[in-house]
Image (cartoon, rainbow, N blue to C red; front, side):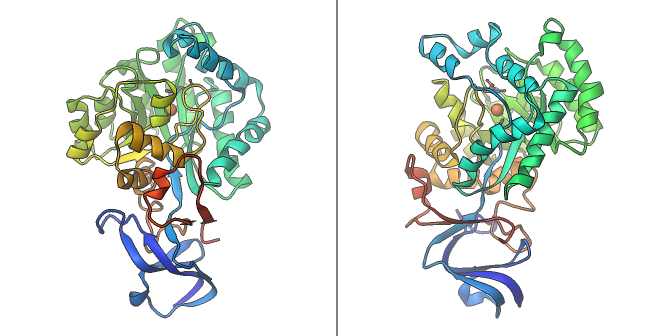
Length: 399
Ligand code: DI6
Ligand code: FE
């Protein structure tokens, strides 16, 4: 078989669904033709490979490139001063209700050009790329108007022209109330449904909303979902983060890709997500940064067989975290996810949360050749350490 590159003498954590656990292959080979995997499996079963380039991995581990499936990476400004306020006792809700929080980032983001947003986001993106991230989801949600939401989404897309990474933009116009609709939440939902979602077709890959007592109601969220589905866009939801609004069950009714946060998810919500084939996205960075104590129902999600993804939720207010490796450690340490669940959570299950399970997230023929090659003795090291990056090499699209 003719191929461009082959990686030999490697231990593969394939994350294949048809293999148990991490899909480990001890003496493995990965071959790429263009940006696709043409073989990933035991060296003993490999066809004759005529490769232009052979890379000897000397026993290193290869995983699929990591996927950060929930970020608010594109924004201007920062909220370090709120960090000080919260350390002096102010709650996230109090700061939000006092006009701080999301709205202060909205003001900074509205004032920034698309170019300035890209420049501000690149250092954050580089931190994730340095840890082997090859696919990233980036939400809008700090523009809160047609002009500025599209500006954020276009900046997110352009990041994939600036760096070797796949970007999945998500419209999150229903993130907070903009000042011009301060007393008219329903009026803003009208604006989102009539003017922002239709304009995001072809720019956003999905539509998200913040269903919460300090954000949008179930009814308002449902209107956003109906408009998104009417435009052929899949949906996902920030659900049950601070209270139980039964948002996950609503998302399930609209065939959502995922429900995210889920600290207050109940049994009925777990069952609804299972029935709908949704992914649960765990965001321990926000739990940690907010010093939350109400754990998501990990055991119930595990028992029900709901695929759990895990992401940084990078955002300037509740999770200024640009390390997916540290997010995995938090998932294990705070949420008691197993190392295997954490690793599947940033690969195969993260791909599912983005509706890209057929394209990335596992080492198997036909998927993108996105690889992370690690200087580790066992995969659990990627979850165990804090603040150490054992990445040896990163491959994006076979390069
Ligand atoms: N939940 C969160 O934790 C972030 N957004 C959301 O829906 C907070 C975003 C911010 O504070 O800037
Ligand atoms: Fe978020």
